[in-house]
Image (tube, rainbow, N blue to C red; front, top):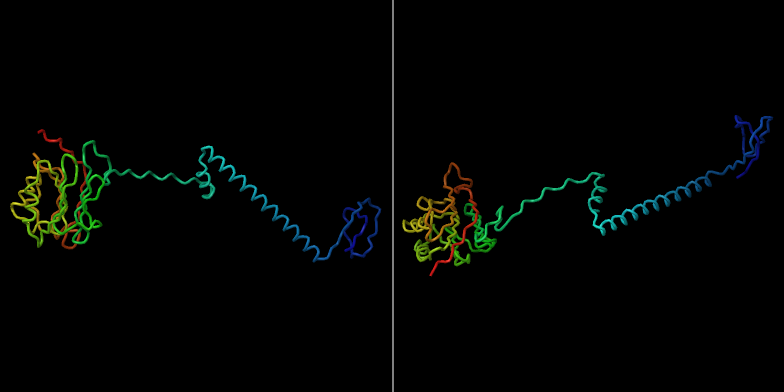
Length: 280
């Protein structure tokens, strides 16, 4: 590397080599000291400057991140909503829309709570002969395939109409079963007993006139016409004065069946009022 001291006018740039002679002129110039370095040394110098710039940049980024998270921590401790700011930072500055709140569900999945002294229930009939029925009472599953207590035919739960206590749960096969078992189950019911019924596969082939009449006395309007593979859900009570408002029936019909040979499953829910204790 060599250094030259020379004077040159503003428009003069004629230098032949590092060892060349630059003649001064009469024009007033400026004394300049120029260093000419070989290419390797210049490359090393540039790399040194680049590394230094990178270190400065990294330090600046680290400082910004440190200050940002310190602010978020302080804001969170003071009750601010730092989470929304974080979401904005990672979503390009646009705040995500607030999701709509899910509708609240009450006992047995009802959309509204039952009044005091009422029992929440949901009945679901079986789907074809594959998916079993379900009976829910006061948010407790009484009958379901998961509980392994469903059966083909009529699935029935008896409930105390005064206290809401479950008395008995039983399934009756109405395809190849004995209807006398169903009759023995329904005849001795006490006044005010609630009867929850959900069908599965075939609820009616073995039903006789007496069985249909007993369901009619419990408040059913569909039992007298219930047919082969109909879907049926029903809530009745011993001693009811009028017909029950809690009953649905889907007739087995080739033209409207949802499944091959079976109508669609039925679902019904509501609130059953508890009965006042009988005066003694």
